[in-house]
Image (cartoon, rainbow, N blue to C red):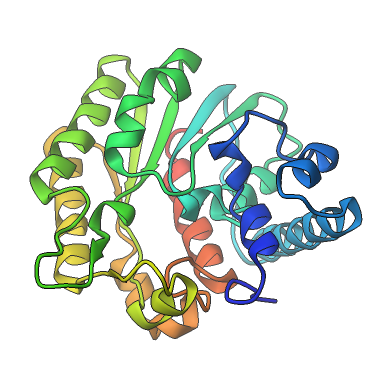
Length: 269
């Protein structure tokens, strides 16, 4: 059930907001309850619900698709924001699908609220120091957030976004890492206004489209694998693939993304 507009504890746990405070294990109920001042039973119930969703999504994909076979050991890093850090995300679905593959190591380099400059500044700590073999990058939504007034501009301009993405791709390529770039998802400003009523945030579709064009351009320029989700998402109304907060993918949206990223990963497993 989508509680993004009704429960702050739900949002804090779902999107792993403790990563912004302390480096603690994601499943440590005691620590999470302390951090978010919540009863352990409530935290445990939320974790169980998220895990149940991920398990169901993974099983549905196993039954409906051919799962790429793992040919060798490898480290796979996922770079992103709350779309990836979500406990019910495509990343966690894919991890669950391959939970019986001990040769695969999963590196979570996604932090809720991150922009491309945040990912760049923490690139060695979160990514390069782990010496990954495969990297998936999905970032840019927070870059395009702006204030809803006549002087509002996106947090990160398009030129800077391109520079940050190119930096990460070039570093990875220099270290012979296979790269997958995924396009960002649509947003619904009305939902964002309900979730963050005091922040006066806005998004412009033109900027979302421009970011996705940059991702495609960078993938083509550097020979990275391009996972274009625009047509996939475009087959649905935005309300069908987004949570009530207008920003994050719901179960259907995450499943669609998981299926397509899984296909892209198949080339390198």
